[in-house]
Image 1: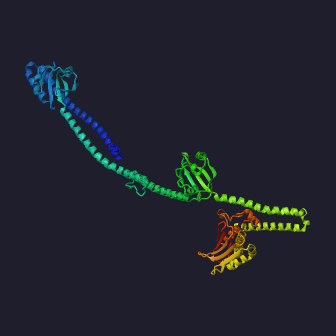
Image 2: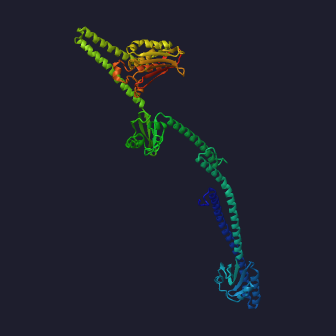
Image 3: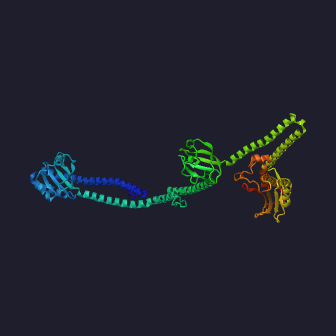
Length: 610
């Protein structure tokens, strides 16, 4: 439960602040007003009492002067006159008046209860001062009844001679009662004013705090991700301007977040569909983001949470260097696993920098370079194979040429045989160069197909006729089977003849004596022309099937070379079939023969670049 603080709200603070200001103002006004009124009442009371005391002292002085002049026979009459003056002249309520002679003896008293003072001497200091001729004699006293009184004593003079004094004591109780009533009225008015001020303060403060509360609710809504709400604009004052500005800020923030989310989705989509693998790490090298390509390349289902060194199987120091701000690149090979091939990929490690914190992580980009490495390897093998294929006949030609030069020309039978070998090796090099040029034209897309209406049955029969001599030499039976519905097709006759010649030639080479070769042609289920060459030869191992169409690749290198092959026949056949828009497939098992299937699409008459 939260503690309760009365002044925690702005509304309460505003109300209390206004009340305190009003209270301080009223207090200042009250103190000034009451003190001024008190001084005024006391001064008026004192002035009135002084005037009456002055009047009475003059009359008493003249009366006592006459008594002194006339002698004692008139003493009783003058005393009565003094008593009448004392009792009737002073009209201040509750005032006690005494007439005192020159010796300080009380001659008359105004109140009945103080008649016992008559004839006694008044020993008051103020009386003594008055009898000495001092006219300003006054003081405030508090009697035994706890009543504040004003005492004024005036000398009774006549002709500059002091004959006595007038002693007046007036109660100030009514004056202070009046002050008390005024104080109560002021306090009552102040309380009413504070109550009304508090009510008005609550109402006025509400006009300020309600928009602030609305702003607070909107801020909370924005913090929770709800941007559709708006703050009501209730006026054209500062709070109204603030509400308008906040609504504009909310709208712009919503647009900015929408753009940010859109960019985030784009980046996520790009990251997910990149052909390169991407790993992002935190400041300690632990993977926090990985795309699908990285999972596939590394063969790890759950990468997040592991370190980059574990995922890539590299030294931790490389990652440490990257997290210190050093970029690096390396080649990593992933050994083949079950069902996967050997992969080679280039890893680029780049630090992630933040302006205020430095390096906060690293990015590892995995680029699959398996194909490029294979191409580079194929290029190296191609150069090596071409060099080897050319060096062998050139060496033979050089040897026989030197033998002829050394005297073999003088022996016609030997010279004729040497010249035949030179001619044979020369033709072999010519075939090799021709095949290479043929492949080069296909690679540069400069070879042009010339399609024509071709009788498929006749074309296959011609192939068998061209190899009839080799077939008879090895007692191989050739069988041709063409679908009755297949008569003619649009083909580059020369190109397909070359493909069939290469395939049939290989079938004859690797089929033992007494074997058989079946040639068939038909329209397959997809409407394409399918030509199959099936033999009963020695077959091809499974491990060599994927590379059988590579250039210069031979299953049995020694035997193939001895049979006069260049290792380019099947590569040329594949390029010709591809130029037709078809494909060539080979299926074989060792000891059970080989089936080569050529599939060509049905096209219209014309020619196009291969």
